Length: 346
Ligand SMILES: Nc1ncnc2c1ncn2[C@@H]1O[C@H](COP(=O)(O)OP(=O)(O)OP(=O)(O)O)[C@@H](O)[C@H]1O
Ligand SMILES: [Mg+2]
Image 1: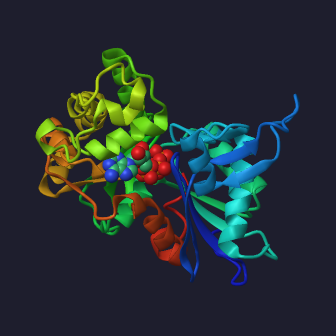
Image 2 (image 1 turned 90 degrees about the horizontal axis):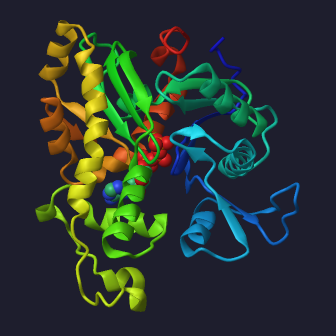
């Protein structure tokens, strides 16, 4: 089934909650755009949401600037498709952009699905891709794609742990022989940190900020302990004259807040490790475990995970690209990496 016609275009698509990456065979990475689409809200009618007017980067900028008359949709939530129609419109646009033309035959698409995806989640993803113009869709668990992208050897039986923490989900995988020995996807990611920051700022400082501002604060602070925080945020920067007379007062406690928010996610990883047979636990303690995804860029996350899991955890270089790099590797060597097709079928 996985033997492909040579004239058919093959693409790899990582439709993330925050970012969509697309690679085309022989051309490499061609799209890296926010997973966002903007509609003309002024022309919207009761039955429809209006015409799409911007995609990706441009749509995200409209969202951040809260442009009036425009409604911006992020079609994924928690790593799964939440708005089918918006996801199809966005993907169709990005796939055409990636190929530069309308393909003669529907392209074969290797894509990342939630680790241990349910039938419903898999069908939603496959249907979105088909409606957007894909032909055959080959779903690969995101934890496996991230592990390949992070350089895990795929031919060794010793188990190794990968934690891919993106915007909406965290994919956890114990990898052995290029397959997932144990794992799952949990609905936790950078979006939850943004939400925790938004609520905290409202509760403690009585300032109302949007998610985009909360994400800025997270990235600016960039760390999970107060000593590591790179840039202090002043309340006046957040709300200007509306800073409730707080003037130059610094925003405190963000690093500790994020640390607290991350602990339950670490506990989920520990839960999976605790369910492993003793031999596999021994194996994963022998090698570094790896964290990938946007949240891997938080300073202190490797220390936090190492402490909570009692393992040595390192961050992958270029952690936001690991999933698409893994999908691209599968795309370029489908037969080898799929063990003649067995690996990606269950
Ligand atoms: N320098 C940084 N420090 C901390 N967080 C960051 C940094 N850069 C990006 N992020 C966060 O990483 C997340 C995006 O990561 P990534 O691109 O891996 O997610 P995704 O693949 O789109 O989502 P998912 O895999 O959950 O569906 C966002 O929450 C973003 O705010
Ligand atoms: Mg991701």
